[in-house]
Image (cartoon, rainbow, N blue to C red; front, side, top):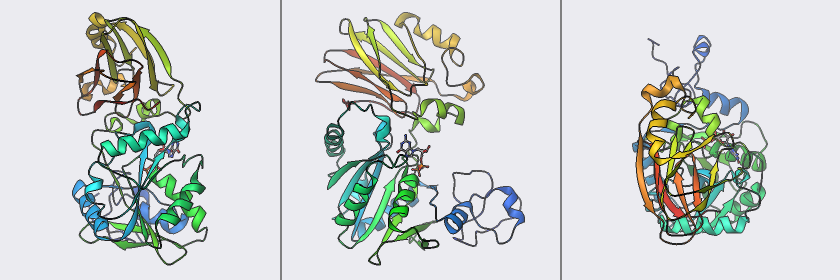
Length: 367
Ligand code: GDP
């Protein structure tokens, strides 16, 4: 695009290349007047929020602003990718403001797991990560599960103040807000934008009954999320669409599991035992011996071990090894954004391999 255009809605510079970045409009829309970015278009015509991401600097400025105002903060995480979707450092900016923590996508967790157990787990993890939420909820924004309860809690906890909704990209923030809009408004053209000082971005305000607003803040990109390392086809395979069915493997020391070609789990020491794998039902798991694993990966990445696809291999990051010793209790080894392996008893030594730049970590078992 040689000419420069600005959006008549929010003033952002128009671009036609990247649909998930600020100022996107399809090239065909440039023929029409007035020129408006897709985000403003959807807002204007459909009262619908579309997530945009922004730079880390802008995000820090927004957090600063939130910290200075007297408001309720609603933080959304993806329960399937809890650690990958956590916004680190939010607690440093919240000031005296209360935080409600919402775990979205509960429809993906096996139904046999009691919601209270998950909520207690989230409280525990949040505390470890430095955040003490006033309350924790689980919802499925897509399925409309527990949304009424959350909308009610937001209304109670805000005590007549504004509400800021924060979350990283892909946690389902837009789906969540679009549901809330239906609950609280239903009218056309009620949503407005206003300006966050010092940022390149206008924020979206949804009016609440008492003249206060619900503010949609842009989604921040967590650069270590698996989603940034794979293409759209692969994302379809690794993103669970319905309740995950754990796959249980009995392993001997010296055995390896491959999760497609995106992750690898080596069982090094601890006697014969079982491991529960929580991944998208569409992701193929292959078992081999540790001694053959490097060679298998060299020969079969992009073939038997897929995703990634063969044509992505050249640019795909190498797998990096992280070793863990399970010292106590029931534990998860997390392949950030891909899934996790639950180890039922302590005393195991294992290694997790993830693409360079993606996180692997150990945590108290979620399930
Ligand atoms: P945003 O980037 O945070 O605004 O996220 P979106 O609302 O665009 O949702 C990201 C992805 O998560 C989409 O593929 C949604 O369909 C999916 N999603 C959103 N809410 C849920 C949910 O409750 N359950 C499941 N399984 N998927 C969801």
